[in-house]
Amino acid sequence: MTRSSLIRSALAACLLLAPVTQLSAHSEDAASKPILVELFSSQSCGNCPDANETLIDIASDPNVFPIVWSVSYWEYLGVKEPYATPEVQARQRRYADRFDLRGPYTPQVVIDGSRQNSGNDESAIREKMALAEHEKTPKMALSFSDDSVMISSDELAGPSEVWLIGYIPGVTQLTPEAGRNSGKKLRHLNLATSLKKIGNWDGIEPERYDVACQDAACLVVVQESATGEILDFSLVPAVSG
Image (tube, rainbow, N blue to C red; front, side, top):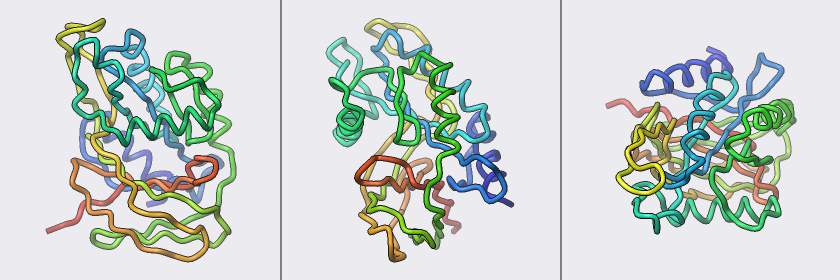
């Protein structure tokens, strides 16, 4: 099975609330590469329910893998975010710095680490996705064995950070009991449950990293340190036995 067909299978499984297997950001037989689309959202953000639905619509694109991050800075309105963590807050702050924003906001969409947009403007998001899909990045290999991954590339890549993202595959529905969205059923596609930096990669020599997944599903992301651009990503295969 080619990598492009793997991501199509993974996305179909996500939308059907089923577990997913493996994908990689580099397609061997397609003109465009799969991209990671991150949505920073909150149960207390008035504009976030529509952005959550926009992400679900966007995920029908076979080249898109979505992740929803919960942020905690709206918790003063009375709703606790069960999956908001300091690591997620720091990730969004780094994006704010890279995109020269005044600060983090919701709903924010980040496309392959290289572009950002309001989560409610589907047309603009799709335009930026189209640009990201055709950007050239070093062709890489993420090879899994048991609870580890070997990262390598035949092309020179920049120094990068390697992240392990835990998430709940498919749609998770949350119903806040307070705040602006009280009583509403909010749908989150691939809701992130953990974020851990598992190492740095020099972009030159092959290197192995521990990717023992403690969540329902996990994603490995290789992200260029200087620019934040996503160089590659892949689902962590379930370990049998």
